[in-house]
Length: 168
Image (cartoon, rainbow, N blue to C red; front, side, top):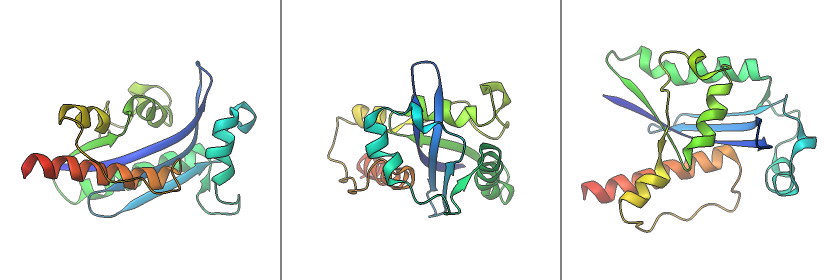
């Protein structure tokens, strides 16, 4: 049995460093997780990231703002909670253009080998699945794109469309 999570990360990158700004995660059952790092360096953001990501974040008083250590602990608890209730369940992670998102996720724990054993060492790519399925029409994105939680919800909607087409 598989328990699937759909996520998106917003980040600042310069070709060497990928700095987490925010992460949004949803699962097939409607549970959601959203966090914004208090530790990213906004000065390193290119103008596009400033306009489309940083300028749209909630105020710093919002409880979504957390240290990376707090995000790591809360995210781990969110991810493994459903697995505790069922034996033999494996976690799957899904994202659109998943490569960078997985690196950002893994870096919450430091290096890739430091990921907790329950968390997969790779994220399945919805964009690749879309290609494999012949690029069928997908649901339209909400206006507030580049909000990690909104984009995670959209990833779930895309996946549902692609898997419904496969089983229908």
